[in-house]
Image (cartoon, rainbow, N blue to C red; front, top):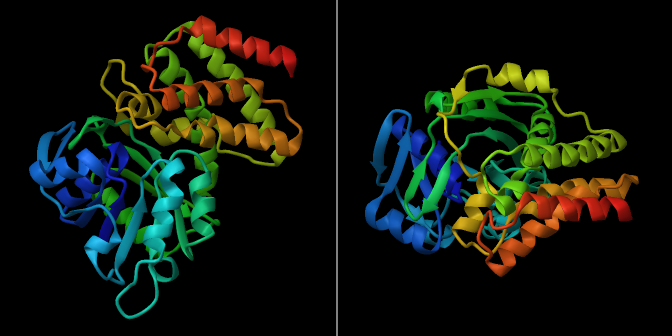
Length: 333
């Protein structure tokens, strides 16, 4: 199989680079200065084993690749706010022998949140969810690091609509051979909903900085309480904290030190957008649909979006100011 990594950022480039190291055929899809750096100098990927440079095919869209192959796997790793454009572009791409990618090829959603799979299922027939536990850094074009060990990251894979199949098992085997703890599961979305709880703190980190502090943990806990209430009202049962802990259990340990997460990195790179609408905003959506107040998550969503739109420096807000906004919103709710 050939893997087409749509969105070769922190997650996409790490997965693509590791697959290539294991002998897999990989195409990276990127844009702007990142695409230029990948073409000119290759992908400089640092893992626990060291730094390697991978010179892989790089395209900005399907028109540069030509007719797709029946054995291609599309791995969608763009942020969710960029998913529709990517899905539309690649879904219409023609496949050798007839039909389009949306009709014939598997699409694996390697994104935070749960909206990517919904968007994909509107367009693609064969959609898989990938729950990604893979801390990685992408702050300059062409350069990515992911330092987990002994496995680079932990990936849970399954059909987005539920269940698993032979194709999922084959993709999982490739990922396992590339240095990941890859688990094929019948209920991948339960894993993704559980990870969403952890991602609710992305907005706190992006606006107030990645350094841990008790006040940040307290605000995060309030956002998680809202989310759990919304999940319960919606009949959503994520995997438990005990299940998550057992799945991690020393399989991919990060070296000590403060690292900024994906939303903080988006602000550092000045992308102009952030995924808060699909993280904290997912909780707001569930709350509005099921009558559960979610004022803390709405404040976090709004604050992160302002930082992205106005180009504010990540971490330039105090946790005291952010908490005060959450307090005011709760008082109004």
